[in-house]
Image 1 (cartoon, rainbow, N blue to C red):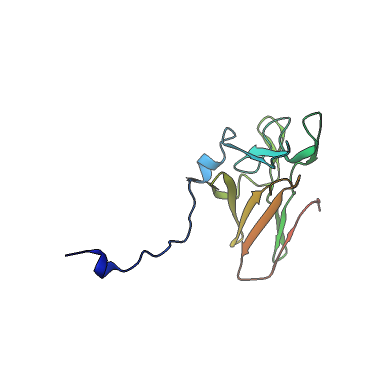
Image 2: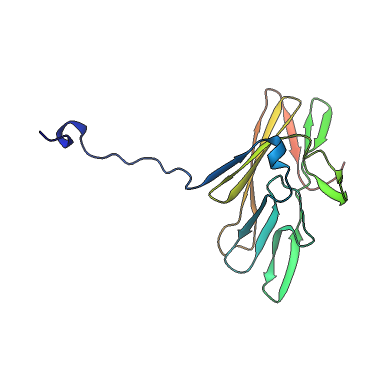
Length: 162
């Protein structure tokens, strides 16, 4: 009796992550949890899983003509979420030891690293914001993907202070 006659042909399974690491809000704030993304040309993005630049050479797009002429082109998107007349700065920049500009760490609900690609999740005023970042090969660029879940209209502004 053959078991293959009842099971039929093998069906492909949707690909999932090869490696996955998830962190709760406290573990995600650990500055030693860093992620290094590369573009294959010598450019890189380096920072903590929580999105906080932790080293003097942390940056989200460090490239140009590596390895000789490196420039930090981008350190943080400076995200500001506006909800029903309230706002929260979702980034966190350490301006002195233990002193942060922005509420990024306070609003962090967790983080994950899927196949070495970081994802951060934050919650403010009932709005959930998930940010993923990756560097396409040979691009010299970082791509940010945002998923904002809200029951009311919100605005997510990048790159400036109010």
